[in-house]
Image (tube, rainbow, N blue to C red):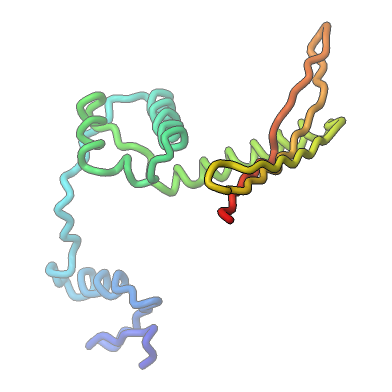
Length: 174
């Protein structure tokens, strides 16, 4: 039989895509009443969260902002120490799953990209500067900078916005 299939003693053919055994375990538990193949999770049942839906969304949003601003790993919020802090602050609160964080980051990136494209579509000038210098110990250095500037209308006056969109410096020892 192919590696993707398994055959039970009752002649049932079960899928095993990528070596998964979930379907096989489910069949043995339900079809043959083999309790040994049931769920054996040692994870304690979660306490009910005392937050309203709006509060839960606010906590999740704050947690995602924390991950972004501090450059944290997506799974840091599900580590035992952090979970204890969350549980102490709000009993039963479970931080967002890493996939939720990932989806939120993709959405925020898309929104930022669309906003940037819209804002940069009115750019009036681009400046490119290139600087060379010799440092101590015979280091030759170069810095390339690309700067954009544009005017934004804020009633009743204009505001000039400037942004460095590219900056690269490198040094070479002779």
